[in-house]
Image 1 (cartoon, rainbow, N blue to C red):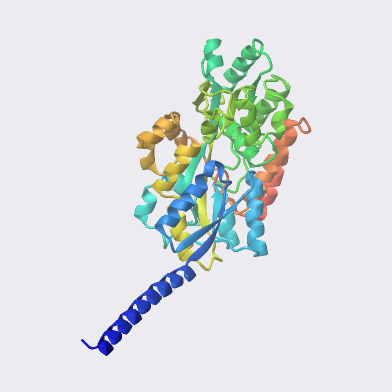
Image 2 (cartoon, rainbow, N blue to C red):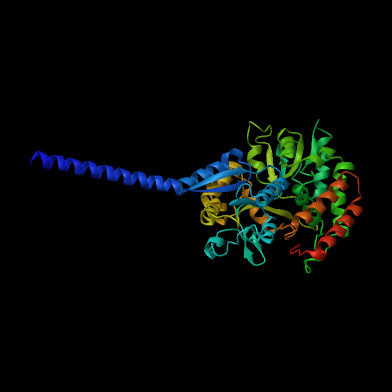
Length: 435
């Protein structure tokens, strides 16, 4: 082969290599340029749960980057923050967390994307029906549930064993047991709950009203206010008496959020606590809890032996913004956020109750969450809060009047009458669907 031919061959080889490298670089560069970034307005990233889920998703979908925007701890503040984000338009909302009572709010406002065309019947069937129903409004699906919840009774099992007391069956028994132990233990209160004036108080108050036989709206006429009954007044009277008559809790309960009451219980200052399931994992963390190994969990007590122990259905879902210009990526992430893999992370690291039926038979989750056996039956007795695009107004009037009664600013009767009047004003012009 002549020297010229060799030179030509070498030159061609170099050109081919350069061309190939250039092609690879171009493809990689194009891939980077085409990576979609979506904003996810999420609950606070406690224990790194959300970050881990996002990281796992991005490994499966390298073409999608999820920008985490953490919402405030307080539920009401979360709603305000999301609303402001939509109204200001300063940062695009693509996917956002929703409390179980918010889907109608965002659906009616036009901020949420209906998901019926993006989620198959088979995909929905894996969820608990209660979790799916909470995301239906006006016949459409607006969110996908990634956890479900219900109110539970936490108790100091070491103290009940010490004084040979059973887990209370009724609220009256809880009062009696609290007084008995308080008389024999120093610096301890009988009961704690999140009774500050926020959404947690609405959830708590409704549990007493339902368990004492009352309701907010009529069972048969969804817009007919039905709260002004003896049962509802008795329920609120009982809450007030726990503070001012029986004194099994102090006035501090009226400024307690979920974090506050947990801190008090974990410090060993309370015998009984009403909380959600996520309190369990925190109660077993020796760095933050002095009652590790001393805590038991049960269903909430009955209103009386003739009644029932209804609980407020809780939970969180993801919704997709109707204004997102990256809906395909947003929906892909929403589906992963509610997947078995993602929900298992939340269950193991934060005691989040799965919304997927199959996970209740997962041995690893059951070992981590020994109270799981109590929860499945609880969902059958869990009530949805009133379903309405104006739920925030409904909840605010319940919160405000109940809180004033707890502070002795109103009698229970006056508080219930005020709630009735305000709810009637709301329902005269606005639609409410549910009890």
